[in-house]
Image 1 (cartoon, rainbow, N blue to C red):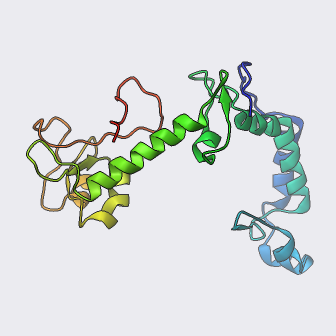
Image 2: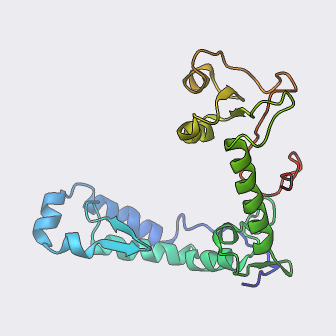
Image 3: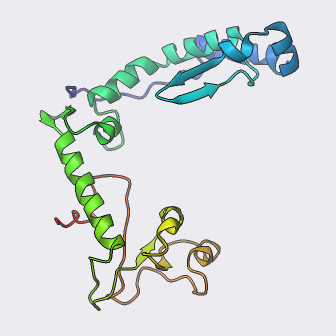
Length: 223
């Protein structure tokens, strides 16, 4: 997939023809009961469903009619949704805040795929980072990565990933949490008060960010 250099501009459907039609349509369906919708259309439970990649979606129990769906599709078309989807998959720079590609597709692409941005296939770079992340996680969990004291690494982080790591409590013991309220940290570090990120230098710290590119963090160390 070849990226385009053209900057993607935001586009809104608010106030469009479909938007106004939906506002009017809402007044007609707002009091409809699901019992009546199913009574009038016995096949509703089969028709208003979708499936893809093993995921099943049943939207028959929402207060929608065939007219509602037609208007929603019209709204998506007026908002340029299809073009935006194509732009994301092609690697266009649709992140207008930072003027770069979002690359969600590259993150999920198999190793042999190609997503070209600024003339370069970024998939090998992404998989290199994913490989080093997996190696880092493995060495922390199995105790191969020791701290300055010669002991196993602990874990400091935000509540969400810490909760996800509870299943690894036998190998990682949270010693503190960064930038979270007392109520959140106490559930993660029972028996300990919340501690900030300014503790002793020998204490391990794991920082996370949702981007591969940041000036505040150094690259992951190579194995």
